[in-house]
Length: 251
Image (cartoon, rainbow, N blue to C red; front, side, top):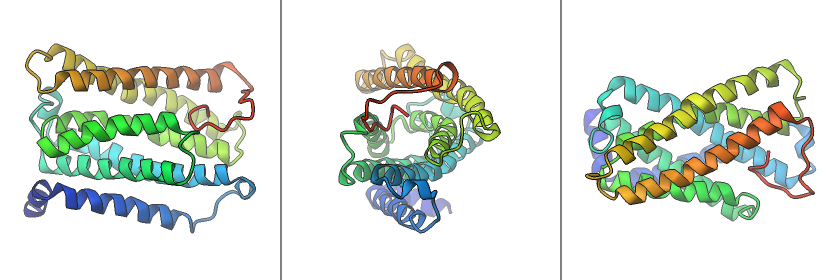
């Protein structure tokens, strides 16, 4: 096992390609599963269902994996620049492959315009994660950043429930929306703001600190906007108006 994990660090490009192909295969396999009949008359909703299903698989995998890595090697939280374990390095490689696959799915499916905010998010993540994979610096930071995937499980589930037509006042939706907000604050906002504090506090000696600081600030602005939209949609309004425009992030 240790020898194989060491091989990942020697040939990251190979394992990155394997990750892209693996998530593409998952995408294909999930298409064979039953889906709500109400999606059949909308190619946009059908694509969203498939895309979110793959994203849910990634979130379940990477969120739990990131927590395990930190529990296994707690030093990563304090020394995010240079400390990491081989298993955490593999996680970053696998997740980078997912984000590349998902960006490709958005572009080649023809929904880049509707999902441009997610594409921007993916570009920032892919850039920072590839830096970590290539240089082996900030691998621990990427692992901490993947704590947000714990919240993504409930974010994706929320959108899947909406696509399936589950009423917002149903028990399942109500429970999920409360957990969603709680994990958004703790795992998403908490992880992002801790990473931002770490970069600012250690800025004077960190490699390419400006690149990571700008990337984090962009992500912080995005997640705060999404949080406002989430609260408005699930807690403060009963109806939303999209003016006929299909947008992933508006949901």
